[in-house]
Image (tube, rainbow, N blue to C red; front, side, top):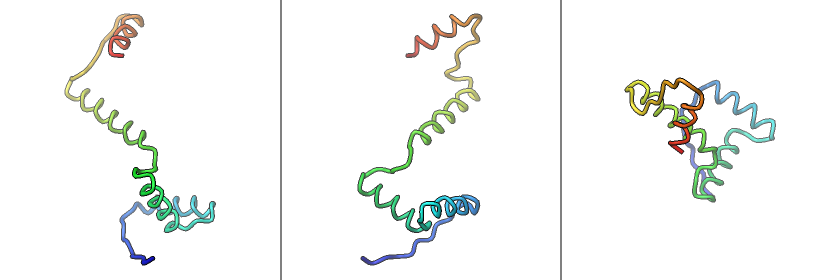
Length: 90
């Protein structure tokens, strides 16, 4: 199998931490990246936790909505009012 060199830009601290982590498993950075890519191709999807990305998108939307006074609920006078509003959206 032919190999190629790939250049990527990565935060220096992240690279250092990744090197330490992978070395604990007897892996080099390159072998870990290759394993990630092989598994992603085999499964035909990224093999990292995509819920982290989705959570960030949800947080970004909530912040934008807050900035634009959109999709805002409350204020509530009681706990029961708040729970009724939450359950109405479910």
